[in-house]
Image 1 (tube, rainbow, N blue to C red):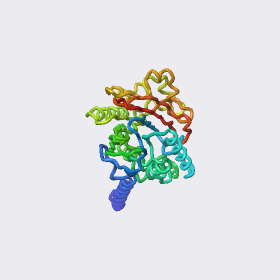
Image 2: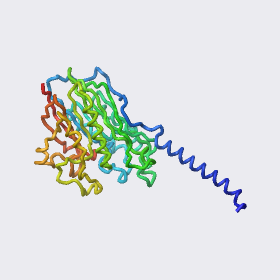
Image 3: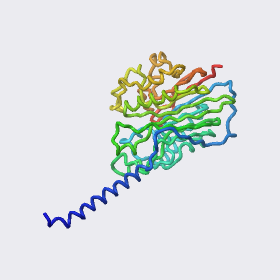
Image 4: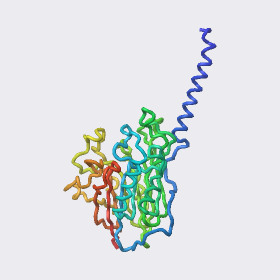
Length: 355
């Protein structure tokens, strides 16, 4: 045994060096120091004197849309294959065309890239502001990693550097931006969490001709039902924690079907998706004075009218908008002609002031 001693010590040092190198690569690739859960001040992009006239008496149009970083269908991980810049340019042009055509005052966006390799390092919020003419924006960075090694093989398919999250676009001045990142998923292994996006909600105040609308934009967990329910409860706790000084809306990708949905599992496009006994929406439906833009009766009578996913052959609703007291819900419709520039379809809601 003593004869092996001269070899064992160098082997031990080599193993230690390899583990140290692996640890350093892991920390670097995951974007250490990592984004931390909790609330923090947001950022605004735009100028205060560039807003369009907006009489306080007229209706307000709010659009919510998960953009899938302008990739279209197949953006979900294992089905991802890199696409050329021209594909992203074309999809951004179409997204901008839909936003302009919607005549939205405020646009709540999810899955927006802010300089990711997978979307040719474009800042998609700035690109859309330029294409739409919307002068005001607020980004919500919820995913930042120097290298995301997914899909795992071959390396040429991997996402690589990622900076992504949500964004709010507006025709009118914004103020008091806040971004809240939900805690990392306890349902995932520790080594996986630094490479996984935080789910989030962000809020801004929109100045509409002397009146103020407070807008929340959110994206809840897609794959872990328990985490999604927990996030919805945390959001509901914030919404009910104080008396907000202005009427408000909260919308985005909730990643769940309504409890009244006829089909909650067994989807051909995502066989693993299961929304049975999903209580995500209960938290917001239980808030006094908060109403969903699509009444339950309307949904039950013609639920396919409100399907938002997938964009081609939609078979379920994942996207919602709620409005508080002080606002009248006049119309809610899914823009089914948006096409496959994203894997979701946008929801357009027209609101009016109650007094």
